[in-house]
Length: 77
Image (tube, rainbow, N blue to C red; front, side):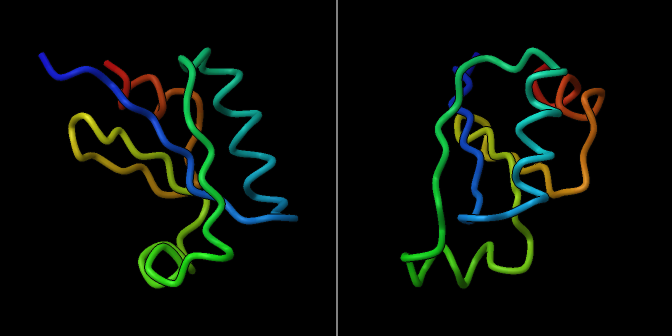
């Protein structure tokens, strides 16, 4: 089984990103890394219009916004 390495890709001053953080708390998601894409051209190109995006790097699976607590739980299952 591949360990989960969760990453939340987000932007500074992003209302949707704040909502995503609330959803992760509701889902009782394990610890995750927050990566801000604003100053990284490669991440901006990949995630620019999609943030927030929750990524399970261990399984190479991504969950695009909008997502809810149930969707996060399914990703983690």
